[in-house]
Length: 169
Image (cartoon, rainbow, N blue to C red; front, side, top):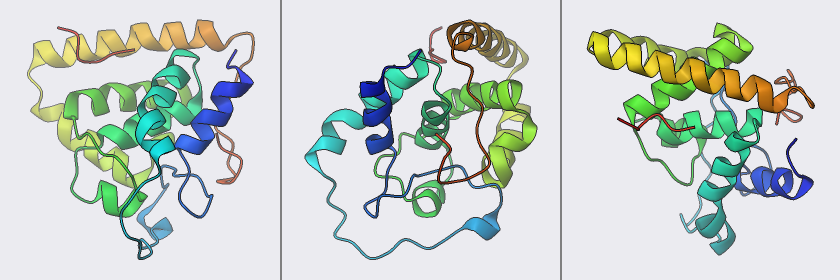
């Protein structure tokens, strides 16, 4: 079960400057252009965002899974659309986390933009890499379900309430 301290850190790490959460959009109609800012992030975010996402995924937190998908989204519009502070585009990690999201919460959980990105990545992977990635996703989904069995979470519909490694070869 996720500690309350980590849930707090994860919510701060996933928040915009206005306090709203950075979330996967279900459609491009949800897109709101970024507001003007100076591009400087707080020291808290610089020091803690990635660690909070790592700890959150270890604790099977759905918000952390969304954060990892957004972090590794390998498209040029990801930073602009989702108002990300940090972006580490990585097709393989993105695909692994996206496959997990689909298995855990259904294909619609990815939304339009992340779903389209996954659909463009998977056919371009060689069969061995794709099989390895699917196997890793399956193993992580099993761990995720076991970790969260005492405190099962789903991704609520309300955007205000919603709250492993794929590189090992």
